[in-house]
Length: 415
Image 1 (spheres, rainbow, N blue to C red):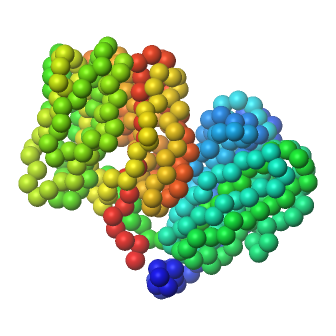
Image 2: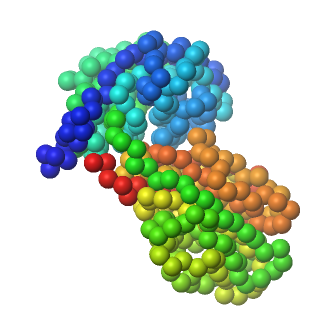
């Protein structure tokens, strides 16, 4: 256990070091923050965004990856990261509607990633408590707090160092940290505001853990152009033994149908009403075929799908239910079990020539929006351990659309 807790120290790396920060509060559809001082290439920039309005769709400045987005209850909270590279100018974060917003950007040296994000707590009490997390690598523990009223800080969290603070107008924001947090459960920390308005609080860990993230290898996709009972998808080029293959498929259907079992594949989700959307995975063996057949059991229809291959990856978790019949689809938060996981979002609509939207900070890996139904999209994004928050996917319709998110985790050790 001791060796586990001291991973960063035993590797000979210096712990992440706080350099500087910058904060801006404004009521508008965008918030531009002055670049913190002293940024060098390779530094990790961590942006903490608070608004006083729930349900906000936040677009981070170009290059920032929003690893967590919680738009529930009394506010919207986003944590985003960027590795510094020839930085210049300021950073602008935009919102889908005007709101009171605060954006704090913190700079850490000898840091590579945000390892773990906790559950964002939101209450009507003036006391905000950032709940415990359990990071898997030593680093700097950060606690971010916000008040949705024009409050000042009455009592700062004991034992932490103030790194960014802006109060007196809503939303007030304070970010504090603790250097040398080991890979073990943290304490909960509280901040007391002077006002009685709603507050939001969250913990996260900044680390310099080595890169162990899954690697995308290749994808293969196909569709039938006339009604049929099956779909044949090629094995993605470059797939080798122990690679993880994730299969996503959809059907142009008007009634419920049943997917047939797929030998060697594990089905983790299947939606069969209005539109068909199915998710499966398989760990490649030493003797994989050149293609795979997937089928339905009755009523031939138009089918389309893709297989994506990832290396140094294992299946982790998936949302408990599909999000259906909405525009946009608000795909619910899931909680990857390891840092440097990949969040995968997929959506489908049984119509031709439809471009489904790519959620903020995600990358479209496979799209099908040609003249043959159905249309679908598969996106991914690097995320931390812990709640990812929701993702918003535009669909152009509130009828016969479905989407879901899953996570795959790294299989390489941090040691």
